[in-house]
Length: 279
Image 1 (cartoon, rainbow, N blue to C red):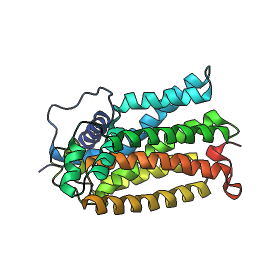
Image 2 (cartoon, one colour):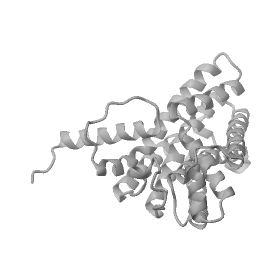
Image 3 (cartoon, rainbow, N blue to C red):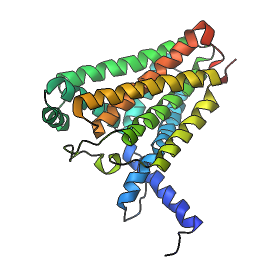
Protein backbone atom coordinates (compact mmCIF):
# COMPACT_ATOMS: atom_id res chain seq x y z
CA UNK A 1 0.00 0.00 0.00
CA UNK A 2 1.44 3.37 -1.05
CA UNK A 3 2.10 5.92 1.63
CA UNK A 4 0.12 9.18 1.31
CA UNK A 5 2.02 11.99 -0.33
CA UNK A 6 3.02 15.18 1.46
CA UNK A 7 0.17 17.02 -0.24
CA UNK A 8 -2.34 14.40 0.91
CA UNK A 9 -1.04 14.55 4.48
CA UNK A 10 -1.23 18.34 4.51
CA UNK A 11 -4.76 18.21 3.11
CA UNK A 12 -5.78 15.74 5.82
CA UNK A 13 -4.42 18.03 8.55
CA UNK A 14 -6.25 20.96 6.95
CA UNK A 15 -9.51 19.01 7.09
CA UNK A 16 -8.83 18.12 10.73
CA UNK A 17 -8.43 21.81 11.50
CA UNK A 18 -11.66 22.64 9.68
CA UNK A 19 -13.42 19.89 11.60
CA UNK A 20 -12.18 21.34 14.89
CA UNK A 21 -13.36 24.81 13.84
CA UNK A 22 -16.81 23.52 12.87
CA UNK A 23 -17.09 21.64 16.15
CA UNK A 24 -16.12 24.49 18.49
CA UNK A 25 -17.49 27.53 16.66
CA UNK A 26 -20.39 28.74 14.52
CA UNK A 27 -18.00 29.66 11.70
CA UNK A 28 -19.20 27.98 8.46
CA UNK A 29 -16.56 25.74 6.91
CA UNK A 30 -16.59 23.34 3.96
CA UNK A 31 -15.83 19.81 5.11
CA UNK A 32 -15.19 16.73 2.96
CA UNK A 33 -18.27 14.67 2.14
CA UNK A 34 -16.87 11.61 3.88
CA UNK A 35 -15.48 12.05 7.39
CA UNK A 36 -13.61 9.02 8.68
CA UNK A 37 -13.89 8.02 12.38
CA UNK A 38 -10.16 8.55 12.90
CA UNK A 39 -10.53 12.13 11.65
CA UNK A 40 -13.07 12.82 14.41
CA UNK A 41 -10.59 11.55 16.98
CA UNK A 42 -7.58 13.35 15.54
CA UNK A 43 -9.35 16.71 15.15
CA UNK A 44 -8.97 17.27 18.90
CA UNK A 45 -5.27 18.05 18.37
CA UNK A 46 -6.29 21.42 16.92
CA UNK A 47 -8.63 22.49 19.72
CA UNK A 48 -5.94 24.79 21.13
CA UNK A 49 -5.51 26.34 17.68
CA UNK A 50 -9.24 26.99 17.57
CA UNK A 51 -8.93 28.54 21.04
CA UNK A 52 -6.19 30.79 19.70
CA UNK A 53 -8.50 31.83 16.86
CA UNK A 54 -11.33 32.60 19.28
CA UNK A 55 -8.97 34.54 21.52
CA UNK A 56 -7.66 36.65 18.64
CA UNK A 57 -11.19 37.40 17.39
CA UNK A 58 -12.44 38.43 20.85
CA UNK A 59 -9.30 40.50 21.41
CA UNK A 60 -9.85 42.34 18.11
CA UNK A 61 -13.50 42.97 18.98
CA UNK A 62 -12.47 44.28 22.39
CA UNK A 63 -9.85 46.58 20.82
CA UNK A 64 -12.32 48.03 18.33
CA UNK A 65 -14.98 48.83 20.92
CA UNK A 66 -12.44 50.02 23.52
CA UNK A 67 -11.32 52.67 21.04
CA UNK A 68 -14.56 54.63 21.54
CA UNK A 69 -16.26 53.05 24.58
CA UNK A 70 -15.22 52.56 28.22
CA UNK A 71 -13.08 49.48 28.77
CA UNK A 72 -15.69 47.91 31.06
CA UNK A 73 -18.32 48.00 28.32
CA UNK A 74 -15.85 46.76 25.71
CA UNK A 75 -15.10 43.77 27.95
CA UNK A 76 -18.79 42.90 28.17
CA UNK A 77 -19.22 43.19 24.40
CA UNK A 78 -16.20 40.96 23.73
CA UNK A 79 -17.58 38.38 26.18
CA UNK A 80 -20.94 38.47 24.41
CA UNK A 81 -19.29 38.07 21.01
CA UNK A 82 -17.34 35.04 22.24
CA UNK A 83 -20.65 33.46 23.29
CA UNK A 84 -22.05 34.10 19.81
CA UNK A 85 -18.89 32.80 18.14
CA UNK A 86 -18.93 29.51 20.08
CA UNK A 87 -22.69 29.15 20.52
CA UNK A 88 -22.12 29.15 24.30
CA UNK A 89 -20.81 25.61 23.79
CA UNK A 90 -18.64 25.44 26.90
CA UNK A 91 -21.00 27.48 29.05
CA UNK A 92 -23.69 24.90 28.31
CA UNK A 93 -21.42 22.14 29.60
CA UNK A 94 -20.58 24.19 32.68
CA UNK A 95 -24.26 24.65 33.55
CA UNK A 96 -25.09 20.98 32.87
CA UNK A 97 -22.28 19.79 35.14
CA UNK A 98 -23.51 21.88 38.06
CA UNK A 99 -27.11 20.79 37.51
CA UNK A 100 -26.02 17.15 37.40
CA UNK A 101 -23.52 17.18 40.24
CA UNK A 102 -25.77 19.32 42.41
CA UNK A 103 -29.05 17.53 41.74
CA UNK A 104 -28.04 13.88 41.37
CA UNK A 105 -27.03 11.34 43.99
CA UNK A 106 -25.92 8.44 41.79
CA UNK A 107 -23.83 8.48 38.62
CA UNK A 108 -26.88 7.50 36.57
CA UNK A 109 -28.95 10.34 38.06
CA UNK A 110 -26.20 12.85 37.41
CA UNK A 111 -25.81 11.77 33.79
CA UNK A 112 -29.56 11.88 33.19
CA UNK A 113 -29.78 15.41 34.63
CA UNK A 114 -26.80 16.53 32.56
CA UNK A 115 -28.51 15.31 29.38
CA UNK A 116 -31.67 17.29 30.18
CA UNK A 117 -31.86 20.37 27.96
CA UNK A 118 -33.63 22.36 30.68
CA UNK A 119 -31.58 24.71 32.86
CA UNK A 120 -31.86 24.15 36.59
CA UNK A 121 -31.16 26.33 39.60
CA UNK A 122 -27.61 25.05 40.09
CA UNK A 123 -26.76 25.61 36.43
CA UNK A 124 -28.28 29.10 36.32
CA UNK A 125 -26.43 30.17 39.45
CA UNK A 126 -23.18 28.69 38.15
CA UNK A 127 -23.54 30.54 34.84
CA UNK A 128 -24.14 33.84 36.63
CA UNK A 129 -21.08 33.46 38.82
CA UNK A 130 -18.68 32.26 36.11
CA UNK A 131 -19.62 35.18 33.82
CA UNK A 132 -19.33 37.67 36.66
CA UNK A 133 -15.93 36.31 37.67
CA UNK A 134 -14.73 36.56 34.05
CA UNK A 135 -15.88 40.14 33.75
CA UNK A 136 -14.52 41.26 37.10
CA UNK A 137 -11.18 39.52 36.57
CA UNK A 138 -10.68 41.19 33.19
CA UNK A 139 -11.78 44.53 34.59
CA UNK A 140 -9.31 44.30 37.48
CA UNK A 141 -6.55 43.09 35.18
CA UNK A 142 -7.06 46.10 32.93
CA UNK A 143 -6.91 48.49 35.87
CA UNK A 144 -3.68 46.91 37.16
CA UNK A 145 -1.67 47.36 33.95
CA UNK A 146 0.07 50.42 32.51
CA UNK A 147 -1.20 49.46 29.04
CA UNK A 148 -4.58 47.88 29.77
CA UNK A 149 -5.73 47.40 26.18
CA UNK A 150 -2.70 45.34 25.21
CA UNK A 151 -2.73 43.43 28.49
CA UNK A 152 -6.38 42.48 28.12
CA UNK A 153 -5.90 41.39 24.51
CA UNK A 154 -3.06 39.11 25.56
CA UNK A 155 -5.16 37.81 28.47
CA UNK A 156 -8.02 36.87 26.13
CA UNK A 157 -5.68 35.10 23.72
CA UNK A 158 -3.92 33.19 26.50
CA UNK A 159 -7.10 32.19 28.31
CA UNK A 160 -8.95 30.91 25.27
CA UNK A 161 -5.91 28.97 24.01
CA UNK A 162 -4.65 27.44 27.25
CA UNK A 163 -8.08 26.57 28.64
CA UNK A 164 -8.97 24.53 25.57
CA UNK A 165 -5.58 22.83 25.47
CA UNK A 166 -5.64 21.75 29.11
CA UNK A 167 -9.31 20.73 29.11
CA UNK A 168 -8.78 18.64 25.96
CA UNK A 169 -5.75 16.97 27.55
CA UNK A 170 -8.11 15.43 30.13
CA UNK A 171 -9.21 13.00 27.40
CA UNK A 172 -5.69 11.53 27.41
CA UNK A 173 -5.71 10.85 31.16
CA UNK A 174 -9.32 9.90 31.93
CA UNK A 175 -11.96 7.33 31.06
CA UNK A 176 -14.94 8.34 28.97
CA UNK A 177 -18.22 7.56 30.75
CA UNK A 178 -19.95 5.13 28.41
CA UNK A 179 -23.45 5.93 29.74
CA UNK A 180 -23.08 9.35 28.16
CA UNK A 181 -24.00 7.71 24.86
CA UNK A 182 -25.96 10.63 23.45
CA UNK A 183 -23.32 13.26 24.08
CA UNK A 184 -22.76 15.66 21.20
CA UNK A 185 -18.99 15.34 21.69
CA UNK A 186 -18.86 11.55 21.89
CA UNK A 187 -17.13 11.04 18.49
CA UNK A 188 -14.32 13.42 19.43
CA UNK A 189 -14.09 12.82 23.17
CA UNK A 190 -13.22 9.14 23.49
CA UNK A 191 -9.62 9.11 22.33
CA UNK A 192 -6.60 11.39 22.29
CA UNK A 193 -3.41 10.04 20.75
CA UNK A 194 0.05 10.94 21.97
CA UNK A 195 0.68 12.87 18.75
CA UNK A 196 -2.48 14.91 19.30
CA UNK A 197 -1.44 15.62 22.89
CA UNK A 198 1.95 16.83 21.67
CA UNK A 199 0.29 19.19 19.19
CA UNK A 200 -1.82 20.63 22.03
CA UNK A 201 1.24 21.06 24.25
CA UNK A 202 3.39 22.63 21.53
CA UNK A 203 0.62 25.06 20.56
CA UNK A 204 0.19 26.10 24.19
CA UNK A 205 3.92 26.53 24.80
CA UNK A 206 4.36 28.59 21.65
CA UNK A 207 1.55 30.98 22.59
CA UNK A 208 2.52 31.10 26.26
CA UNK A 209 6.22 31.85 25.80
CA UNK A 210 5.50 34.36 23.02
CA UNK A 211 3.34 36.47 25.32
CA UNK A 212 4.66 36.03 28.87
CA UNK A 213 8.12 36.31 30.47
CA UNK A 214 9.73 33.00 31.42
CA UNK A 215 9.01 33.35 35.15
CA UNK A 216 5.35 34.02 34.45
CA UNK A 217 5.23 31.05 32.08
CA UNK A 218 6.52 28.72 34.78
CA UNK A 219 3.99 30.02 37.30
CA UNK A 220 1.19 29.59 34.75
CA UNK A 221 2.24 26.05 33.81
CA UNK A 222 2.50 24.88 37.43
CA UNK A 223 -0.80 26.50 38.38
CA UNK A 224 -2.72 25.01 35.44
CA UNK A 225 -1.18 21.61 36.06
CA UNK A 226 -2.42 21.66 39.67
CA UNK A 227 -5.90 22.73 38.51
CA UNK A 228 -5.86 19.92 35.94
CA UNK A 229 -5.12 17.37 38.68
CA UNK A 230 -7.96 18.76 40.79
CA UNK A 231 -10.36 18.53 37.84
CA UNK A 232 -9.39 14.89 37.27
CA UNK A 233 -10.00 14.15 40.94
CA UNK A 234 -13.37 15.98 40.90
CA UNK A 235 -14.72 14.30 37.77
CA UNK A 236 -13.52 10.85 38.84
CA UNK A 237 -15.10 11.27 42.25
CA UNK A 238 -18.43 12.39 40.75
CA UNK A 239 -18.68 10.14 37.68
CA UNK A 240 -15.73 7.79 37.60
CA UNK A 241 -14.60 9.51 34.42
CA UNK A 242 -15.56 12.41 32.18
CA UNK A 243 -18.26 13.43 29.72
CA UNK A 244 -18.41 16.12 27.06
CA UNK A 245 -20.09 18.43 29.57
CA UNK A 246 -17.16 17.89 31.93
CA UNK A 247 -14.76 19.10 29.24
CA UNK A 248 -16.88 22.23 28.77
CA UNK A 249 -16.92 22.87 32.51
CA UNK A 250 -13.17 22.34 32.67
CA UNK A 251 -12.64 24.89 29.91
CA UNK A 252 -14.66 27.48 31.82
CA UNK A 253 -12.77 26.88 35.06
CA UNK A 254 -9.42 27.03 33.30
CA UNK A 255 -10.30 30.19 31.39
CA UNK A 256 -11.19 31.97 34.62
CA UNK A 257 -8.08 30.51 36.25
CA UNK A 258 -5.85 32.05 33.57
CA UNK A 259 -7.38 35.49 34.16
CA UNK A 260 -6.92 35.19 37.92
CA UNK A 261 -3.34 33.92 37.61
CA UNK A 262 -2.49 36.84 35.31
CA UNK A 263 -4.06 39.21 37.83
CA UNK A 264 -1.93 37.73 40.61
CA UNK A 265 1.18 38.01 38.45
CA UNK A 266 0.37 41.65 37.69
CA UNK A 267 -0.22 42.65 41.31
CA UNK A 268 2.33 40.58 43.26
CA UNK A 269 5.47 42.71 43.74
CA UNK A 270 8.13 40.01 43.39
CA UNK A 271 6.38 38.52 40.34
CA UNK A 272 5.57 41.75 38.49
CA UNK A 273 7.92 41.83 35.48
CA UNK A 274 6.58 43.47 32.34
CA UNK A 275 3.42 41.48 31.67
CA UNK A 276 3.04 40.61 27.96
CA UNK A 277 6.30 42.27 27.20
CA UNK A 278 4.84 45.66 28.15
CA UNK A 279 7.39 47.91 29.78
